[in-house]
Length: 112
Image (tube, helix red, strand yellow):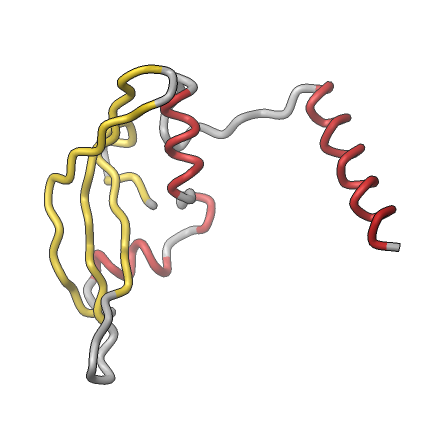
């Protein structure tokens, strides 16, 4: 997912692979808005969706753009449900850092 220029709050874009029979790479370009309804649900309003070739500039912007600008859909949903901006980066507090490191150590310990 990628925020559209000038509207990082509501207007988002996504690429979805299209099943095809020929060798041409096609994508569904979907532009949508997400709105929080309550603490456990959101509404998704699809503004427009259409098929584009892989060499389309809009598809390239999403596919080949900066990784720092992109977010998985579940991160966007989680942020909106928590009343944050869709692309907001959650900073780790000291206690969350300690929990993260403890989980990482536990995983490494269980692997061995």
